[in-house]
Image (cartoon, rainbow, N blue to C red; front, side, top):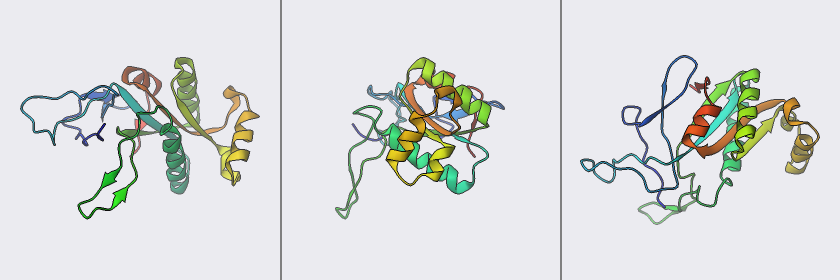
Length: 181
């Protein structure tokens, strides 16, 4: 499977819900991409049946938002066997690691909206990655997992969440959130 071609807001075929307006979204699926006959293969937008969304709490410092996003994306990379593209190679023959095969939509939310999105994700049983405030104090994965394991789902102090699943399901999970920007 080849990685998707970036899609501009003008050519995006769906919109992610937003509290203030409809923001453009790029969607993704494991099926073959939709194409139009008039566009060249290099400019045809890919349309997958699935979508990836990362949600970070809006009150985090910039470095924390970036750190949480990176960790959450690494979790989503394990959502399915076919979620990663193939390795990249430049014209000089240098080899690069595979990336997620589909675009990642990044949202911000306050704590209640993040908790609501978490409950929606759990109720829909989609692959979900999480990051809690307590994980900033830990220096290792084992302690992070122990911290999460010790707290009931409805009491987690969430600072980030990533979800992957059918487009319409993810749209329902992130309904009302703003794209990060």
